Image (cartoon, rainbow, N blue to C red):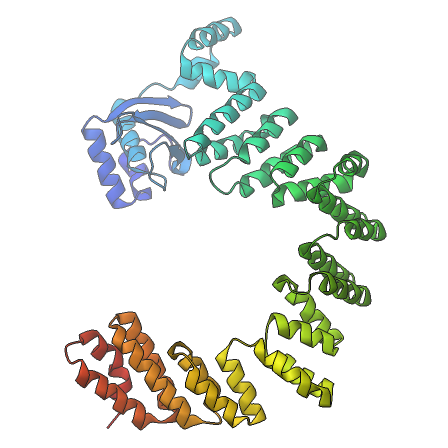
Length: 471
């Protein structure tokens, strides 16, 4: 087994990357190791790095340790420098001296050392862990205000076992002010709070002020364990957030009808109905879900947020009213054809009103193609804006390929005229679509573009793959 502290360079050199070891040796020769201590099987010291303040290094058996430098791995060059300095200086081990002190001598030594600020801080953490933790939370808030604080938060997580309920609660409150995502830290802190049998009231106040997934999970866990502590608090709150949390807790406790009754009381807006219908479906109460979906459509029929409920109604009930309501919010071919089939002769009267709702030229083209309304399709193509050509061409590919090619080529020409690399890429994409229908016409158009703009190297580069397979 390799001895530690090391007796010679060979005891630690093989454990270092070669470059790190060389830089550590250089640091030691330059006199950058300010202090070296030995305490049993551990070496401690300070090494002057690139910052004004020396880095503090600690190394133990197996080169396990830490350094305050920003290097992400250990051992670093400062650890190597410390080991080289130890071999040169061989400081006396402090542990036997400390163990030899009498109680009075040890007490006197601690009292003298307590006059040093850094030692006093460590002593306070050891003797008054809760107070020291509370001071750490204050420093954390100050760090948050300066836009940092993540390292301080990590340090407090390590000291959570020494903190009490009040201190952990304060830590949770401050974490909600973090300039970064506090969820990973909140989960650990909340687990400690629950372990201490924490009061639900402070957590509920924080949740109502700043809802977070971790706080909700913690409150539900606490409520399942001690419903008599949380439910009365939730009953006093009238906010929608409190009502939703109370309902979730009732569901978790198996009190389904109470929870549903509570959610029914809060059905005021579209989002309320969406959540309620989704809950009913999860519970397997489909008929009730359909009834409330229908009620929501009756109340808020023109709100686009209702589309999930209209999808539900169309899929499970499929009445003409369902398809009509969904078509009016989101015109689509499926509902158009469903209405045509369900209304029969009455559809002729409905058709003009439905078509007036369609703003998408491609959808109109698909409808006219299915109905073989060639006059209407011709009028549509004549008045269509060039921006609609690619979508129209795609709609026409199967039935009118020649017209689709024409539209693709015209749209590609407009892109080339823009003169940007992105526009050239779009033109190449459109030509590739045209090439599937008429390869010769697509290649001819690409060649015309290159002849018209011979100095546009980006255009030539973009169209090269299309022309590669040509004659």
